[in-house]
Image (cartoon, rainbow, N blue to C red; front, side, top):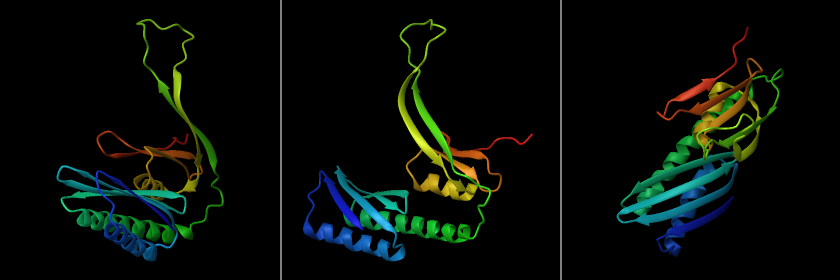
Length: 187
């Protein structure tokens, strides 16, 4: 497990680094497939914040906690990550025996378009500029697993091949905080 610790407006003392490393070792004991960990400790006025991003078996897990004490913030975020890892491990065990014979991986292209325009009238052949283009793999999984990976990851939308219907599905978080699931209708 590779750990990097960054301090923003806080001096990284040896006892603080040792405390963070000790707490992260507890996470490693509960889930041994932790590959990379990035810790950001920051102080703004009276708020002391700890953010941890972890890469676990190809899944990114992120947590943050904010209190008036840095050590309490570290404890809080480690507790959150420990609960997420336990949930992830339990779901992996549940889904390990699910047969995915008919499910296949699909390549998906995701583009973010710039819809801002300078004039009021657009030409018929106007093409919006692509701000970001991303290639994604829609891996076979259940809806529960896709929701879990959306909550654990840093993406706004999760494309996946539904292991029950073998069709392309998506889950995403709406602006009001609710989750939405998109699946094609069978005719």
